[in-house]
Image (tube, rainbow, N blue to C red; front, top):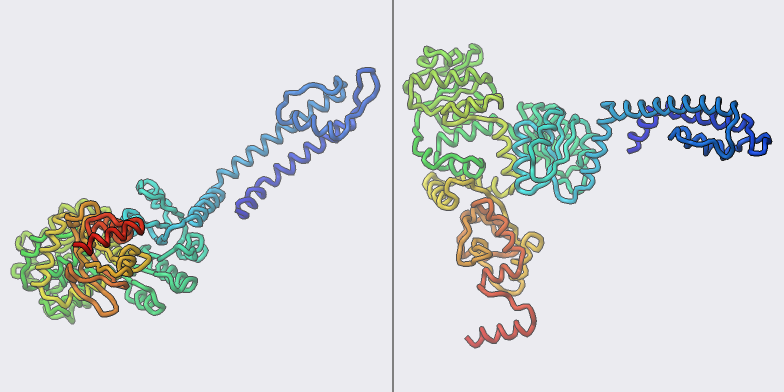
Length: 567
């Protein structure tokens, strides 16, 4: 505010000085020029009446000659002051309008409004740096879950796009460089309600600067970043960045899981991706050799993930030096039929077009499909603007880095228990995963499978804690019941239960809840609010357990107890 006022007054300094000077000269002249009263005596106007006269004359031009009719000398001076004050006012107003239209003044105005919006936030919020593909997906999903967000992006077009996205809750946004600590501070980095910082720009340098500033200014604040290089990943990990998402490694692990264990992969896909793959896609799985086109960072991550799973593969890359040490590698792009034939495309079970050119990737897939129509096809999409073409490419998998990062981060933000469950998933058999997948499918059908956690404590589930402290038992199945009609079950079930005794996967419905339990649930997204109603409202929980309304007075409790004892 001080900077804004200072800038405004500094720009208006010349017109204000001119205006004050013109008024001073006009007032002084009115006191010096002699007038004449009604009796013909010489009369001089005092400073107070001169100031009064010049003030309303200069602003309205409509006046009378008071208190006596002016002499010719006074009328000549008044004529001069009329033109002088009008010109001065025009000069001052014009300068003020020019100041208001200055880009710098507009930026300061927007910054002041942005800081005011952030300062007034009363709910927990995330600070999102970067509103590209990943940032946009995350902001939409967080807002959909009722979580407040603050956005910084260096591109004004993206900030304008955010305002046009018509989100259900307002999102404070600022066009600024997120690598500057002052900007992060303005955006609420040190705000007591800020629960995490998401560095999602396309530049590792900026993401690194955001992570460093966050950890230095607020060490306990959760920081999640994306990265495009191993060097930056190691740097971020060295000072305790909470989560670092490398889209190439993440997708390489995802594909390796799909190739090795299709049902386990589908469980992972249903829990991580809102647009999960169909159950029938698991039956298209075939074991055998894969072809990887492109041996850049993505190709190397794929090769490492496939090698870790003991899978057979053939690499195609135009760089002779990089593929020479690899056994069976072929030099070429993969867009030519003879290169794919040399790589043995007729006997392969899958092909991955992973170069940094969308055109080459689509060409590789089309050529390979002509040579072997049974191939499982995976294509890397580099530009979001090409999404329409890739959506109609009929590939089995389309790798979109922005969507991968968004899904990973959202899963972490929803509940850390999900990561723990996915680690346990790796140790389970494919048959176990198949059974779990069937249960998921029976619960939500083709709709989106959501996941959330419930903690049994006085803050998140006070009704359950109250019931336990009164000596009642609360089985896990109580959470599955519809709070409006207890004989109906909600479309959900528990994936994991964690407490001081350890971790239990797929806990049974009769498991007795205890204070301190953490439960990971999955099901339809609208179930969460109904479950929250049950665990927070004692009357609702009492009805769900007993089928009766709770007694609200001591007499009613005594009568209810006597009735039960009589039975």
